[in-house]
Length: 168
Image 1 (tube, rainbow, N blue to C red):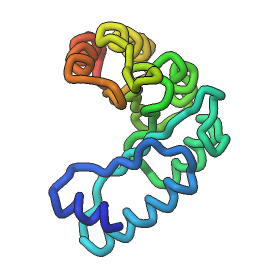
Image 2: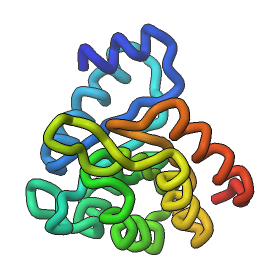
Image 3: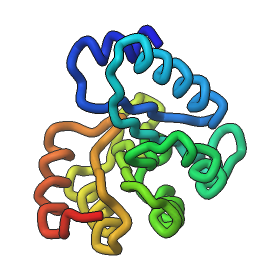
């Protein structure tokens, strides 16, 4: 609630609950956000982004379908995936989410998996091509970058994604 109040007071346009590994955490966060809306008298759009682990589920064991279904009652303007394993492991989950979501779908992966020194090795062009493949299929409405992405990654994605229609 305190974080949401500070963001509302700061003039943000939307709130994002991200890197969610357990829907109970999202529900707890949403309660705090609802309390902030009530206290401030301001209601903002809510975006939700989860994290899928290499085994194909959230850390709490939910697949993307269960994640979405258990949170759709919160009426977010978008649901998606961020962080985690990089874009390769997100492909099937983004496709599934896009097929069932009645809201915008977001994806902002890491620049690959970090090595033992914490370096990310996904190049801007490679990341942009992988995200572009999602957009080409019509699976994305919102794209960006998480851990390890740089301004060069975001520029490459912007340039690649500019060729796809912006709708939903």
